[in-house]
Length: 451
Picture (tube, rainbow, N blue to C red):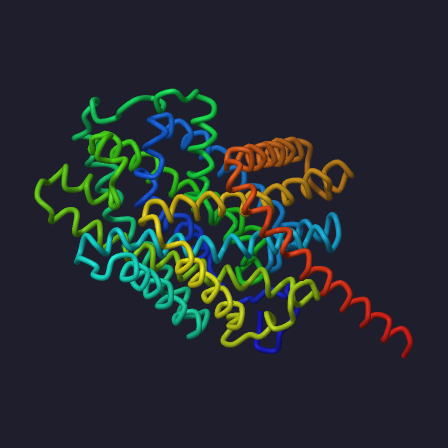
């Protein structure tokens, strides 16, 4: 990506290093989700821990899938590029539109998740209005970093990733020595079956693994993307998985189930249970706010990169191609404005309720491009487009693509009727945009042929 709006396929030799790409993946995965999700999934019971373990396997498979796809097409755009190459413009548009709506609704959810931890540090006056203003401030500060340029985004991403890991590791490791079996609560919610609870909690927990595709979406900005995208995706996902699994077990075992269900800052409550008093909770609250700000720093960039790649191909409004300091600044601005509107429109049911609604919609809209990318890989493998890939690697690619497809389909089903309904409305609204863009491209093609 360059100042002169070079094609999305151009890679930059001086772009993101492997370390920065790993931090981009880890920083985007470990955002606000890990700090609020234990309380969000607690109503489903401790089956949520099983769902997280199963989902970890799926997340690693997705990271491997996106790495292999990036080796086929090492360009910025990722989850938009693969379906378009395999199935044509419409599939590419559906993927980028769904992913784009996911990014700005996810950014809204991240900003909302920060509010509970801000309130641990200081009371937020003004009720729902005051909380909405805090969420907007948390959203817009990282946007300013993006406007400053890619160099600053990369620096903030590395620093925030290091800062967020330290307190999480304390809870995840030290907290295991203080867990109490009676705190875990029931395995499933009363009156609910194991499989429905497993699927429902997994749909929410998917939010905690959004970001496994970060290196693939930014492949055109990564050095040696054919090798480093899959490395960054797998390493970042595994590092996040260790913190997630140990941290969730610790929180469930440190905070009584009845209190965890209603907690707006579960990791702060867990830290207080370890050390007593409120000092530990304050440390976690600071880490959570910094972590969310760091995640928003990366996700705001992601919300602009895929639309940029599609706009270069004429499949998104051309305004999204405007770039400044290697960042598609118009895409950043539009995404942040939309996330702000989502926050203002949905802030009525308290932090936890807003977060839960946004997470379920986000899970559905993320699973659609995941599904299409897995289908693209299966399509190429079925056609025999294996290049120099040896048979053992071919078998592995088939298994990874099949697992990724199954996980994506399962998550769409588990998101629930309301989330699928609202997410589908987002997709259908995009059809009008596609009709306009397709007609525009056809007119331009006709004009060129007549000339």
